[in-house]
Length: 327
Image (tube, rainbow, N blue to C red; front, side, top):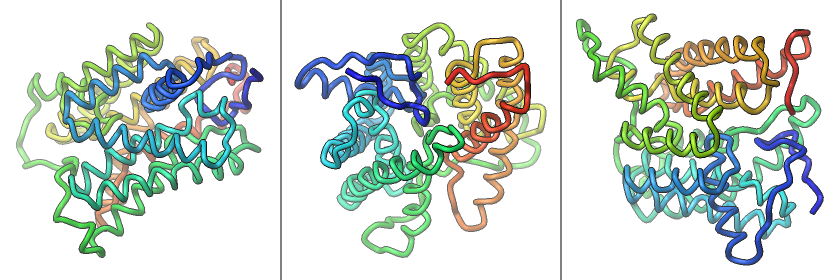
């Protein structure tokens, strides 16, 4: 099998992806779709993530499966390169869209329909953005999910068959004045920073997902630990409300940035490690900024800070002689 062009993906050009036949291949593609939520292409990581979703909420597991399956089926129907599908790159945005729609719109028949439609759009957007970003050698990341979910959730209150009241998943960005940090806030925040990658506020979901990242490799697990810890420290230093820290509202983007820059897109050097830490700090501050920006019109920050920071830091690499791209 020829190796697909993956300059805009989460997998190195030199990686040969195993393609088992029939149902096993499909299961592997779906598993890698879940794993790509954290930029991994290990189907076992995806299995652990799916377990974590079901532990947090069986509905989240179902909607994640629905979104991934529809996106993967759409990619097949549109004739997208099978090697690209094998990497799981066509499934993860659909997975996130399904879980996000459940969180923001509730469990209703209309949400299932919207998840299927959103998953189809994610595949179209992934292809369009891959083409648009190719000249700059930038990855698509979770941009399709952010576009589809952001547009739908913002428009939902205008549709009576879609909107069923306020979102139960609104992340806290403010708490009552005078509240102080507790140890529980900090360690909950450490794990929910990871669980929020899958839009869950349950700390134990983050713990299971962290195990999955260590299944991917020691470097990936340590990157997630570092990103979450940096986010907690930066949020604490800047005086972020304890409830927001405990809910993981400010840290999940830092987890993704450290995985992306620290284990995937940059060569493993000391300079790259420092640069990655800068990215984690930047995206934590940017998360606060975008929370404030979206708040007046009930928009959602989602993973835009991760996307923006990663694009910015990768685009700047050629200007720094001590840094080099791994992909």
